[in-house]
Length: 381
Image (cartoon, rainbow, N blue to C red):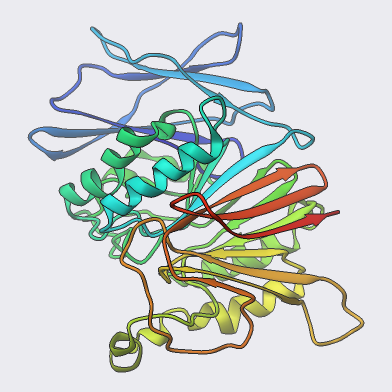
């Protein structure tokens, strides 16, 4: 499976049924010399052996190729297509497929039909909760890997920008880390933190990062592990030239600032209403202050969208859109627990979103698993 993390870095995760002799990941540009990366290894069990290799930084070039070799065999060549700002960048947005492989397959079938046989998204933005239990091998196989392989195969050539959900990682940061496949998702800015020991023993995690997709700048936040480090990162990124000069400014975080549907017992009796308070109370004022255009979340298993003014101050122009896209397969949230009196659209069923970005244009189309358009908006700059 192919992931993108930070500007111009990719990592590839693959698995074998037995230990693989001297595996290497090779990557290259058209008509260019090849680079070889030695992966790091983690034994899941006797018949599941995981390898992970990071490559980059990748130059601003349209095609990047990669494959995995060992001393006897190799995979086929896979090609990542990288688009420029003036080109159409097609982003598939999904979230919360966990514990719903049958419905997830229906959503993936709808995605195939939407894009057609001759087209596909350039990026997958997964807004969290890919599995129910990060320590369950069967969860990873049934909830994520098998449906993706059976219905699309997108995960080989379309990089996934992964936003961690509350079910997606073990926050303990210890050597016995239970996260079987996402424990390698760590920061890529400080190269001294790429040491294999820190990665393989689970002692270092940093999910938050930022990257550009066409003319949009996207900040990825970790809703579960609020920290001084993440707060400082968010303020720094919001103020950065890369973010402020982008045509479209997007933040994605698994738990929405404004939740309306949930299990009433968990919401009221188990204090689950407080899980995302720091996002609403600390982060959201920063989103508005720094003119964020779009906040994309999951967590709540249905679809909602709201577009409101950045501020009640009429001297400050502009709007911010909040979108909840938690409908890729998990059991739906149908009971209302709050009313923020702000959402323009509510759809209580499974869905995906096609986000198209091209130069000065952004188009957002929410589609049901059966192919019906349930919401659409566009922004022209």
